[in-house]
Amino acid sequence: MVALFLLQLFLPFRGWSILLVGLGGALLACWLWVRLLGWFLRLQRISPVGYTRVGEPFRETFELANNAIVPCLWLEALDLSDVPGYNAGALTAVGMRKSKRWRSQGAFSQRGEYFLGNYEVVTGDPLGVYTLTQYYTQSSPVIVLPPQISIDHLEIANGRRAGRHRSPMALEQSNTPIGLREYMPQDGQRRIHWPSSAKQRKLMVRTFERIAADNWWVVLDMDQQWQRGEGENSALEHAVTLAMSLIERAIRERYAVGLILHGAEGEQVVSPQRSQAHLLKLSRELALVQPGEVTLDSLLQRVSKRPDLTGTVIVVTANPTEDWIAKLVMLQKRKASLTVVQPDLAQYPALEFAPYLETQLPMMLSNLGAVHHRISPDFIESQLQTVNAGGAA
Image 1: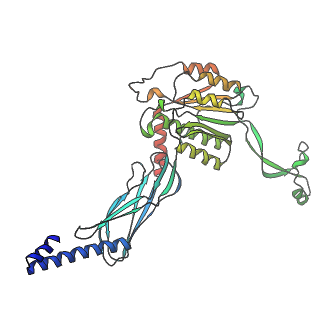
Image 2: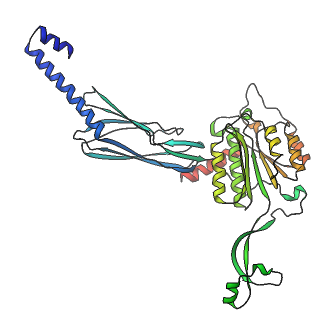
Image 3: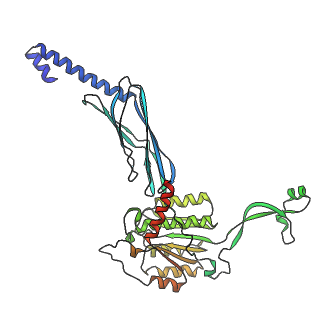
């Protein structure tokens, strides 16, 4: 344009004028085209929000609306979300005063907190002179909970191991009434429900829900020095899966369950309760925890000083050494029942600078009277494949 203007100024010629007007008009038309698209082109992304679980599929809906008087001949939607292994990018077009809708499907492969919705839209004029870029940052947070596997076959220590004369499935009475029955001589007068007794013309008493009496404390070791394997098939990720499965089992079997862990964000302690809302709270803690530098020995040292530590303590760790056995002895003195569940570190890829060394840990735990389980990674992965196949179906 500058060259044509100078030529026309110093060497007047009709051809320079025609080229100057034609090129200038084309540039102006392309600029207006892009401006109109910038004013009237919108892309809406409808994404899932809230909580989901590893392996669960999800679907997103995209709706492109063009209210301009010019068509959008090409548009590239770039996905800026941080979901591993998922890309909802697309290349499309839409006519003037028209809209278009398409869907994208994916699945969450790793636990954690992710954001769906951030994306970038790139389009331009027919001649490719100008480019329009729009950013959309209204993202939807999604917390992906750890997977659960079936571990009902694992023995868990109960109150009897700690010297208490209570059966393995001891029950206690809750404060939740669930029905009525006729009064019996051994019933206390406080349980008599007088309105029902008046209707029935005989004494009626309230019956209450029976629940498991012992508490479960799940202590999860997230010491990163015992990380072996990669991604969701690593030793620490399997430890999180085992902890999640134990918590789900406790809630299902009507135990009050608590959680103690120390990850990259510090120590987290959730006191035992028994409810679905409590299960969601514990699941969220396990979804967000990342490996840290606190050793199991230090974690158990703090755990042993808790005044509310009663019932069954279940330690989930990949640590194969005997360094932390002395702290278990301290827990045993607190009359706590002990169970240790370990991903079998010997079956994960060894690191060159830290080869796996066989220890006397199983024998020492047996002498201590603790229940000990070593879980093969093949078993965990096969269970996860079964769960993912069921979720996909």
